[in-house]
Image 1 (cartoon, helix red, strand yellow):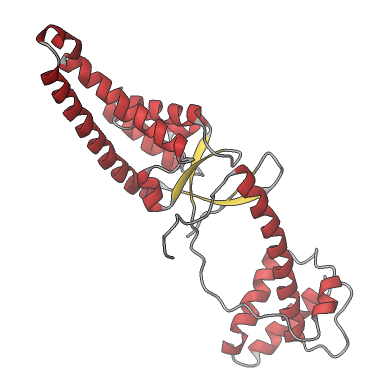
Image 2 (cartoon, rainbow, N blue to C red):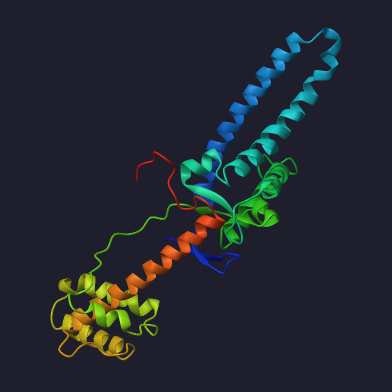
Length: 282
């Protein structure tokens, strides 16, 4: 089941988002941990090479315990902060899983947001230097209880993780009947809400699978309900099924126009949101 939320941007534009839950975020974290291990290995190699190259008198500057703490800070805090800042919230693991970190208002994360997330992660989440077992349990409980799947780092930074690519189920969507487009363009459809529009879509897409007399009874009831909410009425002699199809098609056309305007604003405030990486095939 898809859970979709709505964010309102600073420009008062609503953006539909699908918050990422524990499963997808855990898989993304595994990829990120792998990348961090690679980075830590690289830093270890640099440390060992530097230890061999420096004169013995400078060896105290590269004590193993000090180098280890510096490496942990760079890998656990510096690396995710840099990556999420430079990629607008898409670390390697999140990019693979089609996830992205955004602000609560829908805007891109900045360095301060990424740093806060990484710092909380280091201290209480992963690896969790403070009471690991207890803080891990608390972090998991927070994510599960949150309506948007937010972890402690998200709550502290004012961010959330969302899916960039939303799966959409395939359904037959009838087009505008010939001759009804001029009437539909001027019709007032404001009283046709989302639930009624979904009922129209389900009926028009599946009506031929219904047996009589159930198809006629359901169609007449739906026709009467929609006709009472649409002004002006359709041209005389319009079949009920074509009337319903015309209402649905016109409503879809208006939604598409509004969506295009919303996407234009979204690209200004959140560049690249919802787009596949270059070279990726759907």
